[in-house]
Each structure stands twice: as C-alpha cells, then as structure tokens.
Amino acid sequence: MLNEQYRSYLRWVVYQVYPRSFMDSNGDGIGDLNGITQKLDYLKDLGVNALWICPCYQSPNDDNGYDISDYENIMTEFGTMADMERLIAEMHRRDMKLIMDLVPNHTSTAHRWFQESRKGKDNPYSDYYYWFDEKPNDWQSVFRGSAWEFDPVRGQYYLHSFAVSQADLNWDNPAVVKEMQHVVDFWTGKGVDGFRIDVIDMISKDIAKGKNAFGPRLHEFIRALFGRENTRCLFTVGECWVGEIDEMIRHCAAERHELSTLFQFDHMEVGRTGGKFIPKKDSLKSLRDILIRWQQLTAEHDLLYTLFSENHDQPPMISRIADDRELRYESATCLAAMLYLLKGIPFIYQGQEIGAASARYGSIDQFDDVETINAYRDFRRTMPEEEALERINFGSRDNARHPMAWDGGEKGGFTTGSPWLALHSRYREINVQDDMNAEKSVGRFYRALLRLRAAHEAFLDGAFRVISSPEDPFFIYTREGKDETWAVVCNFESEQEIRLPFACEAPALASLNRGTMEGTYAPYECAAARVR
Ligand code: TEU
Ligand code: CA
View (spheres, rainbow, N blue to C red):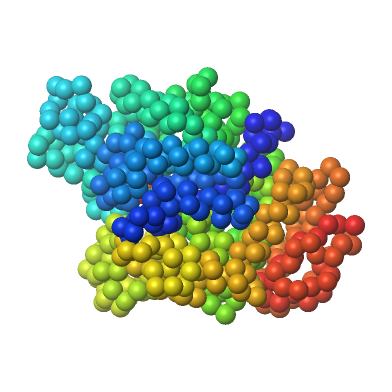
C-alpha cells in the first residue's frame, strides 16, 4: 500500500516545459520564464497541476541548459531570479507544484568549479572532477567521440559523459556532495516542490571497474540529497535507466527515502532499432505490452509509476508507432487514453496536448541539438547526405524542441522576434488555436480525459486489470476502485469489432462519437465508460 505522501502524488498531473521553446515574452526569439507565467491559466485549464521545467540555470547552452555554469542563478536569456520567484508565486497561487530539473552528474566547463579545478592539483576544487594523466579506458561520450578530453591548462584528461563542455563531477569528493546538497536546499528554500534528476544513476561510478553508472555509492549519494529531514518531503523523479524491478525498488521504495519515482525507459525503444536514429516498423501493441508489464510490477511492489511517452529527448511517439498524418487526431487521443488512464503520475510533454508530430527539414543547418549534429557528422563519414538526413529527421531531439505553436500566424504566436530554432515544419497545421477550434480537437480530448481522471478515485488508485489478450490488436483494461470500476478501450491501427465480458454504461469519454462501448471501433478509436 502506498503511504499517504506517495498516494497524494497520484493526483499530480505534470506538464513538462522546455522553457527555450515554450513562450517568448520579450521578443528575443527565446522562450523565457515570464512566457511560462503568461501561460499558467492555459495549463490550469488543460487540467495540469504541476510543471517540470527543464534547466533554467545559468548556462552557455551547449546542451541547452544541461551544461550548467551557475546552479543558483537564472539563465540570462530566460530572465531574472525575480522572474523565477514570480513564476513560483503565481504557480502556488494556482495550487500548482513546481518540479525543477537537477543536473548533479556534470557541470559546464564554464562553471567556476571547473575553471578553478583545471588550475592544478593543489587547489580546493582540484578533485571536483575526474582528472587522469592518460585516458584510463576507452569510454565513449553519449554524444559520440571519446569521453576523455585533454585540458591544456591542467595538462590532464577529464571525463565528459556527454558534450565536451559537460565535465562529470567526482561525487567521491565529499565537497561535491555538499555543493549539490546546497543546490537542493537553495531551490527548496525558494519554494520548489520537487526535482527531476538528470542521469541520477551516473553520479556514482567505479572507473577502475569500468562502471560509469550504478557505482557502489549510488544509493548513499541519492539519500545524501533526498533522505535528509528537510528533503524527504520533496517529490523526486529520477531519469534512470533501470531495467529490472529490483533496481526500481532500490531507488523508489518509500522506506528508503531516495526517489519518489523514476522514468523507466523500456518503451522509449519502440519504433526504432540500433540506437535512436534508425526506424523500425512497430505499433502501439509494443507500447501496450511494456506498459502492462510495468503496471503489474509497480502494483506488486507498491511503487509509483510515471505515465509518459515523450520528453525533450525523444521524437513524438505518434510519429514513431502510429499515424501522424491522416489519423493524427485518432493516434494522439488513443495514446493519451491508453497512457493516462493507467495507474501512475501523468507526464505530458509540451505540444503533446495538440497532437504534436515529428518535423522534417532539408538541411542540417536547421538543427540545433548537439547530439544530432554529432550524429550527423558521424553518419556523413559513411553515408550520403540524403541517408544521413533521413536518420537525423527521424531521431533528432529537435523534433521535440521546436517552438510551441500557439497559433498558425507568422511566428506561431511563440515570439514577435526571430525564433531561436525553426518553427515546426507543420505548425500552420498543428497549433493550439486551430486545434481548439477543430471539430476533432486533441486539446479538448485531453481536457475531458484529465477531468474524468481527476473525478474518479478508480483512476487514481484503482487496481489495474488487463482484459484484452496479448494477440488482440487493441488494448482493453479496467481500473477497479472501491465503489466503481471503469473500462478503457483503445483500438490500434485496423478497424475492429470489440466485445466486452461485462456490461458498461455509455462512454463517458470517446475520441469519436459512439453510444456504446461494444461494437465497431475505427482505427485508433478509444473510449472509457463505467462498468455496470
Ligand atoms: O539525457 C540523458 C540521456 O541518457 C541521453 O542519452 C538522452 O536520453 C539522449 O539524448 C537520448 O538519445 C539527459 C537529458 O534528458 C538530456 O537532455 C541531456 O542532454 C543529458 O542528460 C545530459 O545532461
Ligand atoms: Ca524571450
């Protein structure tokens, strides 16, 4: 049984904001904190009551804020600390929770700590990072190339698991633990309600044993951040690459006072193969089977599960395993019903609520993401431009980072200036205003779904039960609460005759007009009803 604090998180509906691309309030073409404040009522109306805001700390933006040069100051382009304090106050006035993005594994090489550390071996910051005379192994960066960079100032190699300018912090140095505890306390003091923690499993390494993550002190370090008296009250969600339930238990069992929950990424591999740039024919069936597994595992072990299908690193799911063209509305609403009526905490990525799809561009110059550009350079060593661009268009993180299109006007209602990244190639078709006015509106469906979910305890902590069979080309499940049971039907890519083993009321939620829960379902049609 989940404890009271964890059960309260089941009422959270989190919207992930990529601040650079959400709303520009001052015409410089870059999204900012005041732009988020301007849109709080839009988010409240959507049915959201918590925000996860990607890093907005001082940064040179080599990795768009995940390369931090000052954890306790706001990125110049995003505004001021006063703007952040106003955003927090305005959110709390609307009873919205704020989850900040903590990046404890690495800093920008522009950070004061790195600038001091590189000066030599005898200063207080010398061991804040990993320094070696020679490369101790052949580790590769996640963004390609060696993970070891020679620094001419210090005359040694330092570790960077990501971009060259993202130096990994040495957590075995107690001073680093203290610094990160201070960062958590600083933002908790500002009224922040929780943290999403970037690559949390990497903060403990064992270089001698070749482990760049899940090192021997991982849980000690996580507890050093969130197991303290003043931090146990925080909501914490780790970006973890755990594969098995026993690892998730070690991270998230309530009595361990480590993480409240985590992002489990098994389903992020659907629709692709051999890394993130090569598509693979796939369908919602793959997503369904993974969701079923983790619904059952987390229920069995009283763990909180995060319900998400995208984020700022992933191309939109409907472009990968559904139909983002002729059946874009049906695909987007089916994915929402399939995901967000399950047991867990909904995480909605900006644009998902209007059926955002992947973009397409004809030149690498229209991309920004460091991972994408490094991958393109790699591909061009062995393949023609056209094939390299095909891969980039499929897998680039920029697919999720185009400025939010609030309308189909000249700059998509995002800015009055020149947008930092090209507007989405389909923004005139996919934008908030046109969606809300459309006969089939993804946004209206999201509002109805989130209202239904919030109104019925069965969707918050009712038991999950699979009704459909593994070979069915659709997904039927129920949520059994104390007083009522609800059924959810999500059809996949082909028209199906669907029968249920129980009687239902008329659908309380339906993506297309239908009067009963049984009968013919159009491709990607979905519905939910109370079981009689
Ligand atoms: O991503 C961690 C991570 O594992 C990356 O490999 C990411 O999943 C990859 O881009 C997927 O192809 C986190 C952040 O979410 C990401 O935006 C940062 O670039 C990265 O850490 C470094 O901070
Ligand atoms: Ca701006």
